[in-house]
Image 1: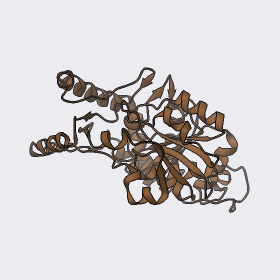
Image 2: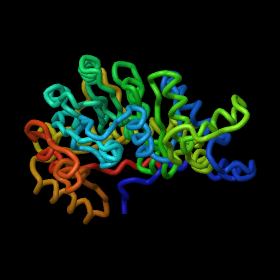
Image 3: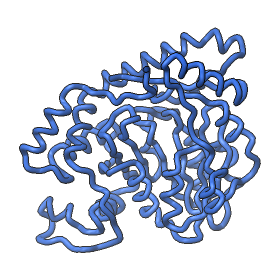
Image 4: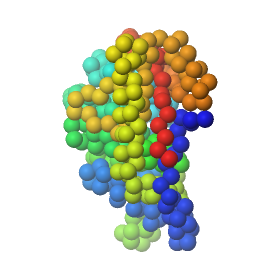
Length: 358
């Protein structure tokens, strides 16, 4: 069986985990947590980074830092994982879904402004398959209407938009190191703070159950106390040790993924020319990370037949998101603004292929 995903194993993961155990520091903010944060900050052009227990946690922190309140509205695509929406629903926000672009499956920047109301507080973009949204236009809309921008960059580590790393353009960026992502720590993520030291210090407090323990550990204060709302968003150093092995070999992992992506593109080129399928489109100015290779079939039946055929060959090809606005929770917590011209029809035609770097 060719599985859809097998997390990469570089070889040093166990060694580093044993080292963390030997250091008698397996909770958060140990040696490997700090190493990973520093490495990620270097990869992201110096923007401040905090490791979290998941990208979901990072999104929840971003919603808090955006000061989302009950009754606020947040604009986002419906073609995404439920965590993108959950983070804002937990703060009492109403979700306003807009359609996606047919070329990238990213939020259609041309549909955003029509969805803005006097209750809109933030825009949450999702860089699908590691391909950037049209961030210049989105940031202009946000500036015009005084809105926060959260980048759900769960799939987008090592991707960029006009030379800027994804996750560093909006107010906050959220990364994932789940086992299905380019670099893994099993379960884990990170929040990128792009707004300055005040938000970074508050993010530290939120991540540490609402306390200023991080300052205490650094020796900046003589005791720590409860300062703000917070939760346990700090990952174990055991998980960070696994991630550190991955980040040390980030270039080689990325090269392997890109080789697979390019091989798929070459192999399916003739079928695209014949009109049988459509391949991923990478807009000008976007550098992707080969997170995912997918096909767009001509209709739902063709996708169903393709997935069945591949499964019979012991190859696991899979579809992706069921649009959130059609889910029971999406109906309860939000609404779709405008027409659903692309989101549902294209979600029914998209199929993902295996990408195994192990």
